[in-house]
Length: 166
Image 1 (cartoon, rainbow, N blue to C red):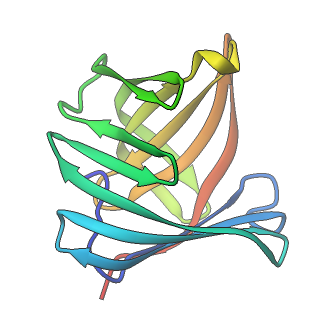
Image 2 (image 1 turned 135 degrees about the vertical axis):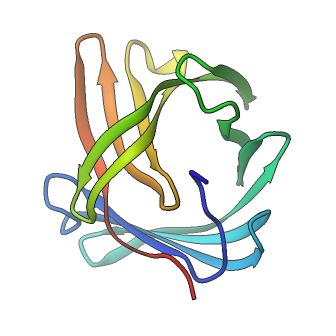
């Protein structure tokens, strides 16, 4: 399970440069229907100031993990979780492309070392020659986000701490 959504789970992410002092993102499962769907509260902080909060809905169906938020509904993960598997989705006026780049990545974060991670590339042609990578660890969820382009990949956000549930 690369995206566990059971009740009581909580994740805190921070910018890699300051480990959350400059930017922090908190995700907290508010309600859950077991491992099938959940309502997640998110709060984005700049320093100590909450600059944005929203509620996202996650559902596991149609062999994927669907994220629903204001104005969007996208499958952020789709089975099979193997290298080369790709899918695309229409999001507003854009077509966003996803591709599993690795299914055995090793990732270091402030929260620890994670192995057997999925590395998922997200590409929106509107943003030109850059893309995003999300790393998902088994039984933990997203642990790192990087920004990439031709010949580079730079860390952006990483897991600082997490709680696995009640």
